Image 1 (cartoon, rainbow, N blue to C red):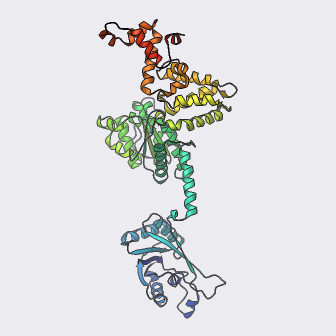
Image 2 (cartoon, helix red, strand yellow):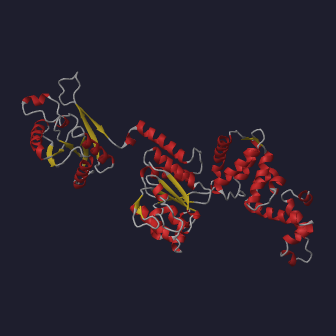
Image 3 (tube, rainbow, N blue to C red):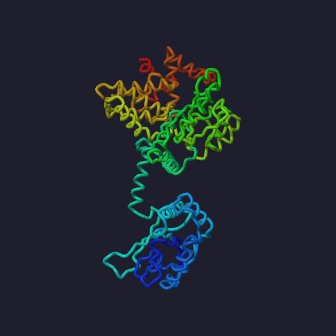
Length: 527
């Protein structure tokens, strides 16, 4: 059975009630703690200053009368100002560091009823941060209707809030809402992405360490960085601005000036001083997209700014300060760039404590439908017009958008543009199959596929049943057929190598049979 150990202050007000017999008629929180019939305290550490030695000895003698099993130990701590938060917290932290906790053999409590309000707050913070592996115990005076009960009552408070069902349920609900906020309210279905955002939420609210977001253009790095900022600002963890810059747009002296500012006369044309983006982000969040595009000199200065919160403006000889949180974005493999000498290894080690790779839209086919609904809602907000798909049109668009033929090179940015086009061209707020077919053709053209969407037009729903291998092969055959005047000419081009090994090559017949496998013929193609 574990031994119960309690830490607390000798109360210079409530515990100090005189020396006579009348003291037993008054409630004294430290003595009352040892009078609780269902709480056996094996060792009690009482903190006091040198002036409180007499009070400590009196409490020790009285506790011996009501609880002889309790060992009362003096812990003398001299504070110049018991209302100075920094001094009290530092003294209690030092005391905690000096105590040899044995959680296997001892159960620890902190008595928070005595001591100044500052001391009580410091006890709470130390327990919450687990510097003291203890629960809180609070004693209360007896109620008026129970005058014979001098000991009063006590309450144990465990700061592990997961033990409290209603609080834990509320925290879980608020966490779900926070994760949804980071995902812009989109009910994403991609399991890996959802797990990643859940971890980003935990890191964002618990840490100010740099985050590195990797992923292709349009994967949502900038949007996620802004959402992290808005989340932290709503929780009063940041008070400054959100500053975003694409490092690919910075070159030469302009990069130094834009990031770190410059002093007057730093270069030709610098007539005034410039604060720079790092100083503008003081107290806030700085998002450096495409951080790999920074030059080595800028990387060295950025490392100093991250680690020391101080740096020199361009052309200046006096350091300036800025305390910001950094989120970086990149489409590059920075590990390769480090190996090639294009990115500083020490800066990479500093910014990749938390690295998250955002998958592109083509790798999140299950998330296309919820993102489609999100983009329709966005279009309605921005344009003031509600648009909807016809049922068949929606099925056709999703079938194409989630197929292997959909490249989505611009990722979510490209999906947003696609929905904007569909919404703009929709008549009377309805997106029809004709609109969808036209948009599919437009996307195919942009991705370098057949410009008129032949397979979807020629095969209809059967096109969605093709394996990627068959689809790519058939699309190439169709392109050759479009460029050829006759079936035989197309066959000669397609079977140019194999026809040489045949005594009587029948290229037209071979092509005719290939097309027939998909229900196609030459007349239909040329028509």
